[in-house]
Image 1 (cartoon, helix red, strand yellow):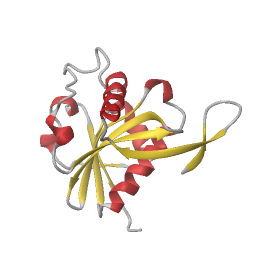
Image 2: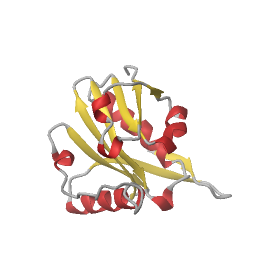
Image 3: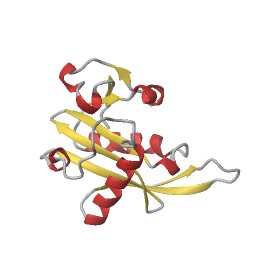
Image 4: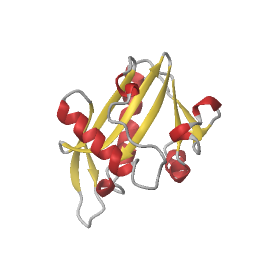
Length: 164
C-alpha cells in the first residue's frame, strides 16, 4: 500500500507493510526499535528483556511496520476474543514525525478487524495522549490492574472498531 509521506519540501510515495515478526532478523529490528524509542536510559526503571515471555505468548502478536521495506515501527496486538490490547507501540527515533505512527494505527486497526476484534485498548504514555486522541482513541478505565510496571503512569484508552 503506497501513501504520500515525509516532512521535506518534496514528497514521495511510501509503501507500507505491517508484518508479523517471525525471523531472527525481524526480532533484531523489533528489539532495536523498542530499545531506542521505549527503553532509553532514564525513561523507565525497568530493564528491557528481549526474551520476555509475553512476546511469544499465545494470542500475542508482535508486528514490524515497514516503510519502503525498512523497519520503522513496532507494535504488539494481544488478542482477547473481541477485545485486543495494543502494546509497546514505537516508531524509530529517526523516523518520528513522518506520518508512520498514523499509518501504524490504521494498519493495526485493519489487522484487528480482520481478526474479528470489536474494541482496541491501550495504556498510553502521558506524552502520547494527544496523538492517540487525534487518532480517535478515547480515555477509558478498562483495567486498573494493568497500571503497574511499565504502565504505572499511563492513561487507559479504548477505540471501538466498526465492522467492515
